[in-house]
Each structure stands twice: as C-alpha cells, then as structure tokens.
Image (cartoon, rainbow, N blue to C red):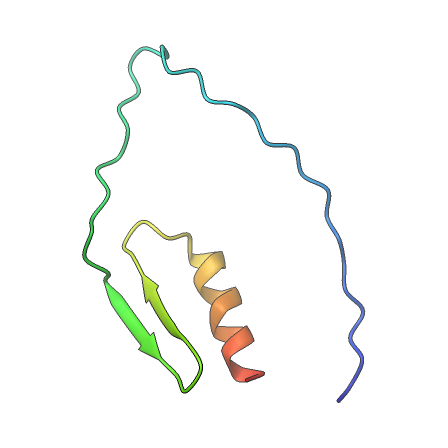
Length: 64
C-alpha cells in the first residue's frame, strides 16, 4: 500500500447566534437524494451536501 502524506488543517468552529435577523434555517429533507451501498457500508447523500464532501466520499470509496 503506497504511503500518502496527510495534511492536517486546523479549524475553528464558531457558535451560531440564534437571534440573527433575516436568516432562516434550511429545511432538511429526511429522504436522501442518493444512497450508495457497499459490502461494508451504506452511505446516504442529501441534497444540501457540499460538492467537496461528495468528492471526498467518492475518492475514499475507491480505496475500499
């Protein structure tokens, strides 16, 4: 198995202000847009998922 250099990126999470005017929370769907089933996992992807997250999941699936 080839060794790949991993990059760790530090992040800071900010708390959301619940009293922010003019911002309405998105309506979350309970039905996935797509489901991927493998021998060891079942992955559900919803419409509001960022495209970069989907790309990362697809790249990781190639390594299974």
